[in-house]
Amino acid sequence: MRVVILDSAAEMARVAGKESLERCGLLANRHGKRLGRVVLGLATGGTPVGLYRQWIEHFRAGEISFQSVTTFNLDEYVGLSSSDPRSYHAYMQEHLFDHIDIARENTHLPDGCAEDLNEAAASYEWQIEEAGGIDYQILGIGSDGHIGFNEIGSSLASRTRVKTLTRQTRSDNARYFDSMDQVPTMAITMGIGTIMSARSILLIASGESKSRAIRDAIEGPVTSMVPASVLQLHPDVTIMIDEEASRLLAHCDYYRESEANRVRLKSVSLGVTQGREFP
Image (cartoon, rainbow, N blue to C red; front, side):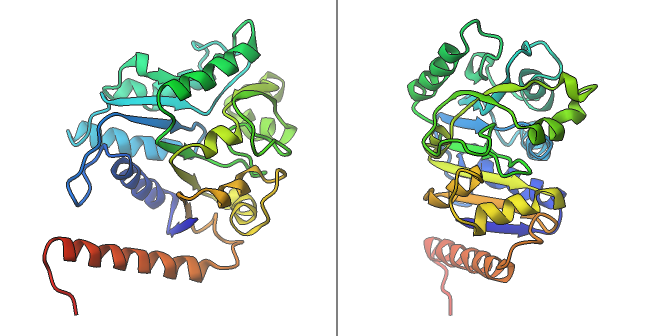
């Protein structure tokens, strides 16, 4: 697990935005390599907005295209139609899809208004598999440590399904609704097993309100009571956070030193590739 601590939420969004595009092959990295088709797992909420703005800026600058991209979102509320401005369908249109050249038929979100929700969840899981699985998954984290809408106690092997939302999650999301009573009580979400099947994962978090969840996810035991802690078992996870979100971590100095060494080694490797000599 790679932990990257940045000075501010704005800096985190800038770095995460560029690195995610490089890692999934949309933005040529320093080796000049681009990939073919790519499947992205996307998140909603307040934190990813800054990352998506970075993607949009790179697109408007003519540096990237999303024509070869297929996306699958983590979740959707049960009972909100895709046209509801509070739905995650509407969120994705507002914050990303309306501003880039992605084909609408290549964007996927769970159907929270399906007549048979269990069938819709199984169908969504099948669609992900048919697309070849997720290459690069973007995650946020709830204040109680949930990822997607996999609430506390979720099976660490779970696949896409319907989940009941905790009162804490509904309270955290109430700012997007007129009242707490309007916040849905259920959602369709990718399961933890689905998320862990992604080839690479980037989790981003900012603010003091996420500091406990970040501490428990990175430095606590792997437990279903902190669903994000399962990321400790994934072979390719990056967690990018700002200073406020890192404040409860016991080993910040080590994470910073590790990242500095990673950057140093990457620079040396690039220099050797380009034929430069290093002392």
